[in-house]
Every structure is written in C-alpha cells, then in structure tokens.
Image (cartoon, rainbow, N blue to C red; front, side):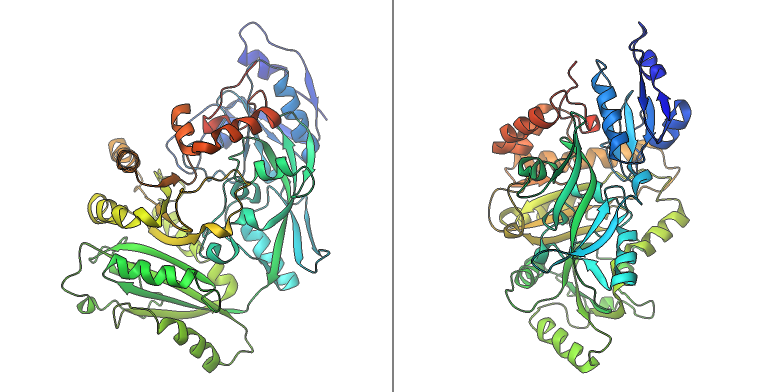
Length: 510
C-alpha cells in the first residue's frame, strides 16, 4: 500500500516540511496510538512522543522508512524489539520507531553449515524464548549462548552483547552468530558475515543500534540436553566466592555448563535475603550455618550441569560431586534440583510471573545498573558497593559472576574493561514497587550515578553494559581508544546519524 507520511513532516516542521509518501506493505501508526506503543520502555523512567510507529513486513519496508527519514532535516529512526531497554535507548522523540516484532515470523530455517555445524536463520524481531521452544521441540537443538531473560529480540541482544551463565564457555551471543542481514543508516539492505562486508558485520554486533537494523541472523546451534542439575551454594566471604567462580570458568576440561552468582542480604528479607536462595519450595535456609564473622551480605554461586534422560543418576551425581567437591562453600548451605533443560533456560519466567502479579514488572520503574568490572577491582567494588551502598538490597537480584575476555572478539563494537582475561558482570536489577512516590525512583537513579561516579573517581577498571550516557564526553571515556573506530564506523554506515537517537551518542545532521 501507499502509506502517506506527509503528516509526519508537517508535524515535525512548522513550515510544512516535505510532501512525500512511502510505498510499504506494512502499516504506519501515528498520534496517540504511536505514543502508546513506543512512548515508554521497560525502564519506565523516560517518556517521549514518537511521530510514528512503522510495523514493517520485511527489510524493504525498513529500508524505505530509513530513506524517507533521510530526506528530512531532522527525522530519526529507532528499532524497537520488545521494549526492554532501561533508559530510552529504543526511543525516538519526534521520530520514527520501527516495531521489529511485526517481522518475527519472517525467518526460521534450520540447516547445517559447510563444516557440519547446525545453525538457525531467524528474524531480528523474533524472541529468544520462541526460538528456544521451536528449536528444541522440532529439532532437539538449541542456541549455545543465552541471556537470563528470553523475552528479548534477537536484534536487540545482538546489538548489545547478550550474556548469561554460558558466556564463560561460548562467549556472548554476539560470538555465536555467523551471518546478518542489516538495513544501514543509508537505507541499504546488506548481507554481512566475518568474510563478506565484515566491517559492517563486526560494527553492528554490540553496536548499540548505531550502524544498522538487524533483520536476520544466523545463529549457531548445538544438541539440546534433556535435563539440568541446578545447584546453589553459599559463601560468607567474597574472596572465597570469587576464587571458586574463577576456577570453574577457567577450567579447560570438564566444568559446569553454566556458572553465575549473586549477592544477597544476610537476613530474612523475602526479596533480597535468605528466602531467595533455595531452589525447591520444600527446602529451607538454615541461617544457623552462617559463620558469626559473616557481614551484611552473603554470596551465592549458582551452577548447572546438563545431562540426557538416558544418563544414569549415579553418573550425573559423580560428575557434579567431582566439581562441587573442589569448592569451599559453607557446609550445609547447598541447594539443588533437577529440571528440564527448557524449564531451566526459562527460569526467569517464574520471577516475571510473580512480578507481574505484584505489579512490579510492567507498571513499575526499573532503574537498573549493569557493569563490567575487571578482576583487578572487583574486591574493591564489593567492599564499597555490595557491603556499604547496597547492603540492604535493591528490591531485586544483585548478580555478580566472572567471564573470560578470550571468549570475546575485539573486532565487534563491544567494549570491555582494559586489564586481565577475567572480568565480572555486575547487575543491580532494582524493582521499585508500583505507586511509590517519584522521589524513591530518583533516589535509586541517584545511587546508580553515585556508583558510576565512585568507579570513575577511584580509577576502577569498568565499563557500563547496556550503557547510557548523556554527554559525548562520557561516551568518549566509555569507548576509550576505540572511540575513533566507533566514530569512523558511524560515518560510514549512518553518516547522518539517523539511527538509535535514544542512545544520545550522536546528533542528527541535516
């Protein structure tokens, strides 16, 4: 159909703007309906008024929308997946938002590459949760690398990195994709890979949406296990927790298939305390086991071992004990359960359902803070942040676990801490109760800023993950010696800064 966008430009330009139309097969939504769809995100702390939401049928529609924006002096284009950004990264004030969810069914094909590796071609607008279910049920295969929460689109996570407890083994999701179809900021639809248009391929991966909109990705698969032995063990001392976590992720031979960890309050708090650790509702946390020397927070190492239905229980037990027996956790504070592989990968769904029931998922703000912190400084971070600033909890999970730099390709646009092979992800996933006064949200935002400021002023080797800065000076510091490469890539693939204005890295040029 011919979708007329003359009202877009007329609204955006008091002098009348351009008179033109786009020939697309999808739909364009304007006015209040557009604001309802794309005026907020999961963070719930930013509100904008997009001029229009485009629901494309494919890359041709996306290309035409970008080219139409190029003909204006000020229109920008933001790709929106499932709206799970925290600080308005997928928004476009007065611009066009591409609703990628309308393309989720465009691609799904499983095949075998020339070297015998299975893969799946999937849409950039597809949810990882749907890919998991379909790959497992139809092919007994699964992607190798995940995020903890799977209600996210492929294009969204690949534009950042995509990390979870499998990252130490397979690298982030950006390391497990071999081809992309991308619409650049010039409106060009381009296929790319490590050997074809490689500059665009590596730019887009972790590129924060600055260089192109991902419409298709070829992701690596592997045989899906049937079951998972899921284990949690508790530590009183941070150095003992990090010693064991680093040992597990550094094993060249057998290790667990998943390694994560979290900090929790040394108390009965139902959100951040002892009750959050047991995996089976029938288990209970014996607080008498905690050493008297323990401080205000404790640490939980969370691991998982994959196995087949055909494996003997004694074999699984032996494999698990061979690894667990090397760890120095508090005796008696070990919790475990056996679940299906799909149930484990979708484990956050239970938390999501509980949060929705309480009104803290969709309705409440989420002032989250995610960082990468080097091994060199993670103990300093623990002493100041975990043990002091957030020792009473954050109203949600506080994750901390190690990853290996050697599993990340430095040709992508992702930036990591400068020193050492081991670094940690820290995630303060704050859930603010609904209907709380605005100043309580602002208090959380201020504390996040204080943590970042403390890191900067104390020379902590860190980078924000899912970064958000308001000044180019901060972005320059974030990228460091890779800033010039990032700017060069922008000038090549999005020279007028059409894409991803919500990141606030570059200003739109006429």
